[in-house]
Length: 242
Length: 334
Ligand SMILES: Nc1ncnc2c1ncn2[C@@H]1O[C@H](COP(=O)(O)OP(=O)(O)OP(=O)(O)O)[C@@H](O)[C@H]1O
Ligand SMILES: [Mg+2]
Image (spheres, each protein chain N blue to C red):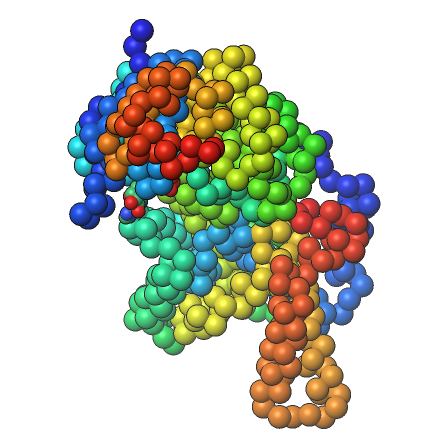
């Protein structure tokens, strides 16, 4: 089976700082893959390279069989990668529905088709009732789901989720986990997520990659990774309580 | 198609719209020539305000140099008429691409090299100033001593050459306002309009959902420039004289953005309501001060400025969203 996304030796430096150091990873179609690691490990930077915000200083990124490193963020999205931002960025003065429609219009010319797609996604993310509210009036958990809905409306093959569970209460986390499971099961959506909430990682991910100081220190099925001494030492040790 | 146009419009909103439109249609039969001249000015500002609003209100790109497009449209159509006897309707077909090209050049320079916000605004001012200086020395169209269209005391109106009585100009500008309004409403509900709003709200997030922000910002500038140039054609044939010092003056650029700002940036009715309020206010002020016998130079401007200040402070989103809420029309967008 060929990977949907493969990152080969991706490296990113910010002046002296090596934020991401020759990362190697493959995400298979239909998989849910998690990237974990302590603060400042380079997770978001890795996402930003995949999403086209940064061009890697070295290495390659391929998606669905073609190179995408060096493409602009909008080109990457049109290839089929949707993303959320760690610090959510909804369109504040637009309604929930309009936010999602902006995504749905990407592959649809007609308003009616875009509206239909937006409603479908709003149902999936449990936001349909709130569709006429301004995005700026939403609570954080709702904003996080709106962020996902807007990305999802662009019909991605791969969804990049940057800490969408952070700051949620356990019940809300479980609700999100359930939503992603269902999306993955029913639509075959491939998900690459960054997450600190181990409860969500354990529940969702088929495979986990651990970053530390920009480098991969472990990779494998969640049950193995959490028992890896290097991982416990550098990351989980400090947050074992989670 | 027609039904789709009215989709999402509340019934009493539609009724109000019909009444307003009927009143505007009947106006020349009711008001005197002084009021008609004022209505023409109001509708002129409503039209250019609507055109400017596409860039600022929809796509979030602040232009402070829209006098450039007015001027280019005015000079192009006027020159073709005076020099070659071409109808302004033909002139219009030349004015639009000329202004669009100017808009495209400014847009390209700004958006390709990531000039945003105030720097973009300064760039638009700079281009209007270049044009002002350029036309001052462009003797073929009169240079700084002005360019004039032949005028006579018309008893009939010729729509083909736009030579005639104010009533003709009134209905012309009213038609332009209606078309611009309908066009903006269609745009706002379409793919392009939704993308513009996304760019206005958060450009990086817009890019993340696949929007080619460069391309859509270019569309906004070019369309806005083209629409604005038509106001210029109207201006040239209505006033019959053009001076670079006046036409391209930055004061013109500022004047034409006040209506949408006061009325409500990004709203469809904002530019129209704003134009009525501003010109109405200015004229009322004039009448009151005259009535009181106050003849202090600048008194009118000071009062005018204070009123604007008050509106901007009390209703920072503009008057229309507030009026719409009062009328139960939803309030945020029509
Ligand atoms: N634009 C930037 N300029 C300079 N340094 C940056 C930039 N973005 C990130 N960094 C640095 O790169 C390193 C990795 O940051 P990154 O945001 O990728 O970490 P992260 O793993 O996402 O952390 P967190 O869990 O806190 O979100 C950090 O040391 C950070 O300060
Ligand atoms: Mg991060």
